[in-house]
Image 1: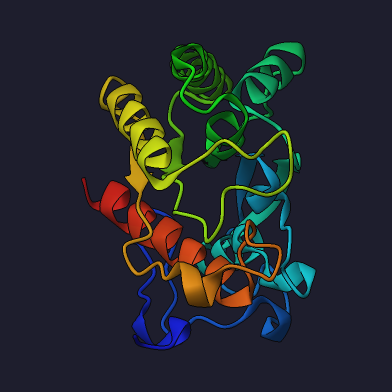
Image 2 (image 1 turned 180 degrees about the vertical axis):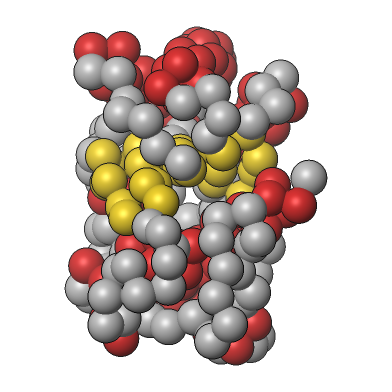
Length: 226
């Protein structure tokens, strides 16, 4: 696996620069490379940055830096998709150039095999995507598929998940995204749960946050070229 910064190339649709991308902590100024765009992120604790060793190592911050964006992080630890839907309904998102959504993990862990969880998840996605479009019809939306966890049996009542359930929720996400032209999926193909999950068995460590950021960045490249 290549180091993060050696393998990324900035998408033309989100600005450009000639020199290699840098870690957020190394940036001199957020506007040193041209116009700064706005990125708004919503979802669960991964979005909030749980288990990252520093704010600059959260996947939202890394992706924002590499895409030349100013982040607006609205992640809420422990939230399910319907919580996020209620959030954007109560307080519509501010206009942004790029929206990131990562939700569904806690739905799967909380509801388990109960199919009402999947149904509610699909409905919540519609509400959230509609809210993003209403805020800025020309925005890009990156929906992040949930990687697998190391262990699902801890942290009651969020202890009913499984790889199969995560796959089912990701499939529902794909179906919702297919109905929304502005949405592109970010899949963490290089995920390794043994190496990228923190000791709590749920949240990404720094390496995990880097890989999720990489997936977001690559999805933005695909969208900008489409």
